[in-house]
Amino acid sequence: MKILESFGAEVLFRILFFLLYLYTDNLKPFERHIQPEELWLYKNPETPSYIPVKFLWVIVTILPLVSIVSAYIRNRNKTDVTCAVLGVTLSIFFTASLTNVIKIIFGRPRPDFYWRCFPDGKFVAGMLCTGLQEKITEGRKSFPSGHSSIAFSGLGFTTLYLFGKLHYFGQHGFGSTWRLITCVTPIFIAMLVALSRVCDYHHHWQDVTVGSFLGFMVAYNCYRQCYPALNSNFSHLPLSSVPSYEANLDSSTIGNSQLSPYRSSDNGNLFKTDSTLKIV
Image (cartoon, rainbow, N blue to C red; front, side, top):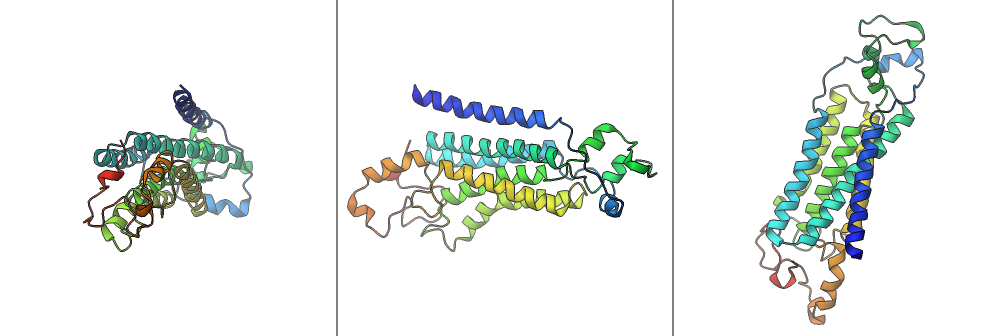
């Protein structure tokens, strides 16, 4: 019963963060005064997003899901699936809501704000905008980059998850090129998403830098809530499963230099674990 109550509370927190994200997404940001000498910063051409918001959500949903399902197919560990889903959803929804709150408080104009404010290019004294109010409001939400923070929160978590599953920082992982490529691919995609926001003039480089850092820091903390350190012999397991493993291991096995959830004869099979260490 307590487990169900705890699980329900965890799910509730994620729902609340998602609702907070939706609510803050429609709030008007602080209207920061723009000095005449800095107006050039906001005169970049107005272009469509290279990566629309809908496509961003597809990316941060599909890639983590594929990684989690792949691990489950190999290990059939339902506890791991639960921990991974709770971890990545907390990372994404908390980051998204936190990013929106900062955007509203800071109110930094986007690089293309001038053209959002004056679509015809005719400046009006006092920055009395003549453009569409919706575009003007959205134009004051540059800092930090939501695309960057959300991408790094979801795909950063996925990279950490893969590092743990493949024991890249363990004795069998170092020097393994295929493990490295598999693990860094998600965060490389997150980096491309972040860079696209500078290229399409929707964010300043500072917005993208801070957004990326924010997203990854949240991802790391959410990951460590659920999983041990990446250099642990049990980095492939949820934290809740580690104590029972250690308690059941033979003392001679613990002292063995070959202690690892992977067989010493492992030829690089993805997520392969020794049957004696496999949890269901």
